[in-house]
Length: 546
Image 1 (tube, one colour):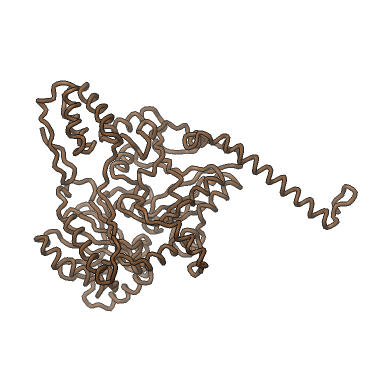
Image 2: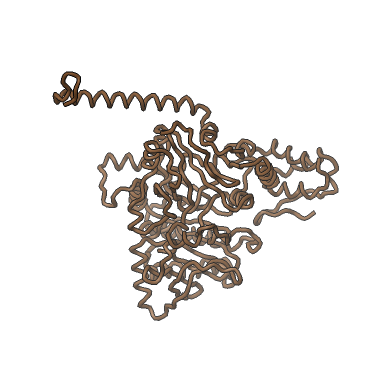
């Protein structure tokens, strides 16, 4: 029997001729469950010919192993604090060196469905999100990130005056399967190729703005010693002498993190950049913000308690219509996240959605689109929502993230300044829907992706679709979506909003009545205050308003 493989793990599996009964197979499962992922077990089980053995093995694995989910090929590196600048610099070089050695050592990358990616903490001032991604493609290693707008425009100006620079284009994919992303400026520096997306004068594709790619041909990496002695040194030189980011490989210090936290807070609450907080305000804000890996290999700051406050205001849920049917749902769950168009391209999934090309132009390709449903106005008796065969219902706590933006209508994730200034907060979107009813084309755009662990339910419109999805996921070794079992998480939905609210919170009806009672009391109180004002002004005489 051929051994199943998961990246570079080695797993010993008993030969098929020793598996005579369901009990034998279950015993084998018990022996390997600690070292084999559930999807590997599924491959082993499927290699036997007896259907009863398959069923027995899967049932035994589910009982013995507990919750199982596919491990994503993407992760983030956590930087431990260093006490001084020289220590931080050396630690940064070591982190990138270790990361590079790791991605070079990944076996079977040419056969992987998606590329492996490791996100490493980096410069705290000029690099967006304070991370550099290291991606292992089929034949090359890519260091990629986005610069802040001022630093990007400064770099473009410098490169235009460099006689060694040539005009080129940034593409994703390989020969015979390339997707054009943006026009670029290119420079060869030793073993590295630097590509920078052009500015607005020659490039209207907003999702590329600020993009920097530094590529290394795997064929030029001869040994781990060469990586440490030459490649990291060249990378550091490119980043400092050409890109203009000094100590780019150094993780942000406490002050850089403090500034970045406050900027994320202002951005997510649509506050002016020059807003100054009092010492007390700043302390309270910083105490609520923490760095969290919100999707595999992607970290941002979240604001604890923000979503919970919104949930107290009015019932709502967040949803997404999955395009591409069963295959798209399978891919999303196996990779661990619903990810943006740009992220799909970066990681080797050359799948375009219905508006991928226009999203690249508007800037929306850097995010995933979801909608918010709330409708207190008609007491939740609104018409069914129109969804496709599969849908996703997300945990409301994703609204704690500080990296998403909202529009009350469909703007395709537009980031042009004249449009972006019209964005609103999630609180404002909820308040508006509470006042006027559900706005069917509202949009919330989350940077990069949303983790499968933040999916509360996967909805289907037919029993057949539900059964097919359950069968597919079970055969991949998946038993849970987040904290729910597959049977609990994959639900048949009639499209009625109240059905979802009941699933999210079984006590929703009593809470809704309480909200409506409070609302009516407030209306009576407001009318009473208005009447008092009339009487105080002497505008109410002998039963008439004068």
